[in-house]
Image (cartoon, rainbow, N blue to C red):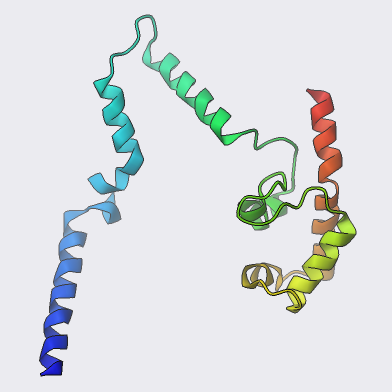
Length: 160
């Protein structure tokens, strides 16, 4: 009896999966994959275009507002290694997003923390995984770069 119930459930699940995949919803770029963009498009088409503004002007205004919402992610230049390994959690300028704020810590503090993450003395599987293949020289380069963030931020503010 149990095997029959499991068999029926398996058939129902696989049939449901096949149905969703064949309709091309979110998985294949169908209507559901448009998400917020589809809602935004419908809202824009419902509203009247302001007189004197063509589509290009409207698009430029939208881009400006998105840039303002995102903030100035190019506050100062960082290495490609930092961008690829650190920026997704700690932010492009070290202000922290998902991960903690790095800007303001000395290079020595950062280096010691990186060594502790790599060795497992500090518990964080994401950090350990990212640092596992790096040498101590690589860790020192990251620490030195992050330690320079306050000076880079100050130099950027002085230029503006």
